[in-house]
Image (cartoon, rainbow, N blue to C red; front, side, top):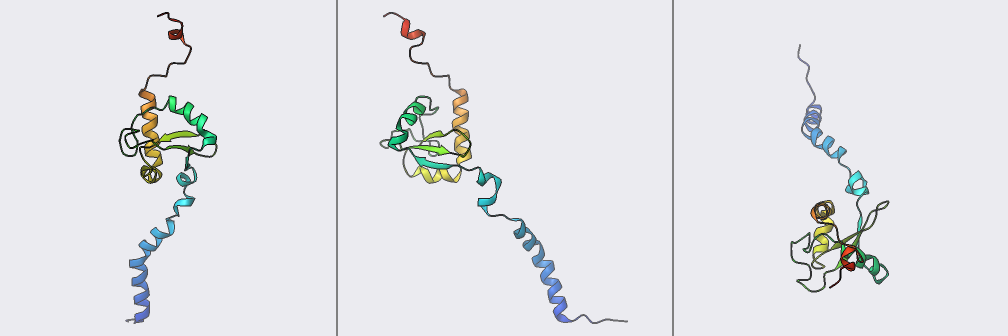
Length: 139
């Protein structure tokens, strides 16, 4: 006994078979704004005169003398723009780039560039405090 399957049922089954995995994969994709890593992402904000004192103090302990985005020497293209990397609930971080053009590169992969700064800070000797023992030495 043979049962005929209507052609439309065959087409529907084929569409589910072929398109099902792609649809299921798409269904699990979430927009970047709702992923946990994006929620924890910070903002790169240019330093304003209001934050200048903070930036000057942070610059004293800045661990690199090159742009983390390009590798260019800071100051080689004029005054290096300074930014605050701000994440809610965490301390602000200073980010110095060689030029305004590197801002977009930094924004694409901030975790990568912040890790470079962290690694450099770990391998850098601590800065000497003003007025330490060296200040007591006579000439």
